[in-house]
Length: 228
Length: 245
Image (cartoon, rainbow over all chains, first blue to last red; front, top):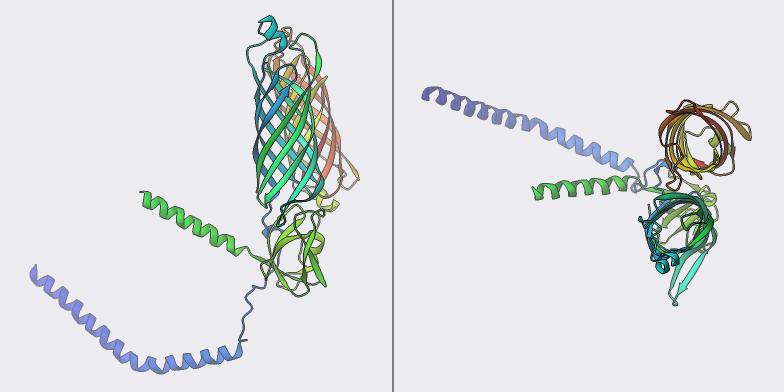
């Protein structure tokens, strides 16, 4: 066993030595070859222009450009639900800007219906589920785009927009067709962050108070959105 | 384990950053100058001009406006019309065209919102379509129907045929099927409840407005396969506002 290992080691050493000898012998031949390479490289460098344009020669196409047409955000405010008092409202909005003027906007809002005067005076309960929720799908128009100046050195892009749409309002576990219209002020802090202040009216027909009538629920909110 | 996770995250981030850097687009001004606005809209003031032969980098776009950065590091918004007067590094005019009627006819995807009257109730919904050819498309829509006696949710799939897409008002014919879930209004008891299948046919019209918008008007006739003895027929009108891409 030991002799076998000896033979193996010996062959490794011998072959290693042979390799180094051949490498040394070949070294004499490679030297001139390397100098030829260097000379041809010099020639090539002289032929090419000294300054290489930093910009790659290629087409610019629309598909390569990142678009920032979506806006997503949250808002909070007060919702004056007709007959049910004024309560805080929280919501989320998603908008898609189709042109510089027009945009689609979807909102989803949650609030709580307070007590009607009938309930508080008569000490009765009209319905148990007091959750109020709505969604709207609307089209907005940037009516007054422009700048707002804060102090001498700061100018911010802003837009006053009008918005109208349809949706559904859910009160007392029932959904009602809702028409919505309103106005908003978009204060653009940076290209990716905007502050919104909005006033909206949600109009729907309700019969939970005993008579069927049109209700107006006015909402005022403040929110922030992120462009992506 | 945490280190491994960290190194994976770092390498992903580096990969993402380097991938993002590959997509840099430079353009050269070919007009005497182009105007830079402070915001993406004609209502925002011009605050700088880029001179002929100067280079600018396109950073991103919002609707028809392009955020660019000059060699001097000044950033602003340039309109599509002005952007078309720049040259890409290969010397060609930058290929940024406005969506036209031809693009509308050859559209692949479209989506939008609609509202209308569904058998006396209001319907509100959203739809999306994929065009296999200029004439044939498949469509999916989801709607909420808010009626006086009941509320419903409706999911529908249909095949649309547009025989004359080049007409200003292009007629459409559709055939589809779907499911409707109806819940009675709690104040009333004598109403039907449950989930039913339906099939429908419809006729409609589509009209290109401008840019990427179009209007659509549809009339659909539904046959709802109820669990009762008689099937129910419902007529629906809907008007929609949509865009294509």
